[in-house]
Image 1 (cartoon, rainbow, N blue to C red):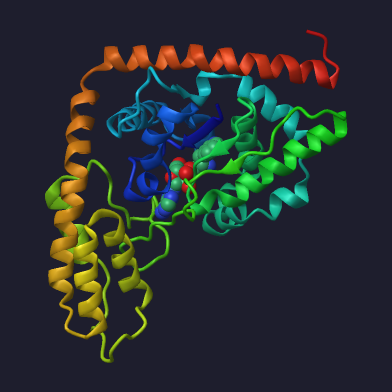
Image 2 (cartoon, rainbow, N blue to C red; image 1 turned 90 degrees about the horizontal axis):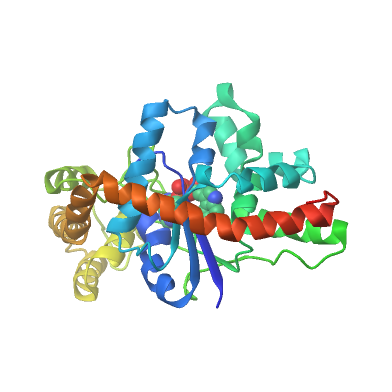
Length: 328
Ligand code: TYM
């Protein structure tokens, strides 16, 4: 049985990008693999959250994982900070991670551009922490959206480097996992190519129907096609991409045909899209609301996850310490 691992940063509620990029397949995976799904709360410290917000966000992601259908009995569902072995492996991997390669990482360059006043060492070494997350359970497969592809490549680099330095075949090379489909990138409602938690362009799984309608009706569009089978501009292609995920094939086909023969009315398309998103999100939102009130259950799930995660991670860290020359 293969080991599958995935993580989500607790920096806001889950949106459709998170869902279709990663979470959707978790439900299928949990029946076929040994799964570790975790809340990447150490990672979120790069933006210095207030302790109360951090706690609230961790709870929210835990609730949303569960509401999306994850069974804590079948998988190991845990918070990263409940597994300090990850931090130890991170420290060890950092000793063989080089400034040049970390600085070249696209997500680091983005962060530097967006927030030049907060270029901290945690941001720079984000890929080694992510590698530690994956390697601590010696995972084979990592379900991620397209935006995490480079981090996964760096994990392979660090794993191979460790094996080479210590002349062992200890770490495996983890691969992206999307059941043979291409990695997904869900676009934003503002015409940008990626839906993100903090960019104001996201549809969240717990958005109320009225909010979803408002957001979708406000989404960027153009004046409409003027010639048959014309290529779609980015903001229109974005709406079609979202529709492809939440609507039926017939609905998608109908609006795609009407775009191609120039009869499309964006208002109608948006109305349909909003209703399909609402239908998709409503059962998840109801589950989120129900679970949020049950702190006792959530604490039990978290404690059980921490224990199972520790069992797996402690084996890895013991072996790593032995390999690098620390005596256990
Ligand atoms: P995060 O929290 O930004 O996103 C969680 C998951 O959602 C995917 N995702 C998307 N997929 C498609 N379209 C989008 N617009 C979109 N936005 C987000 C991400 O690819 C991810 O799969 N660094 C990670 C968290 C992490 C992790 C790990 C993941 C830490 N350690 C180890 C896997 C393995 C992150 O920031 O994801």
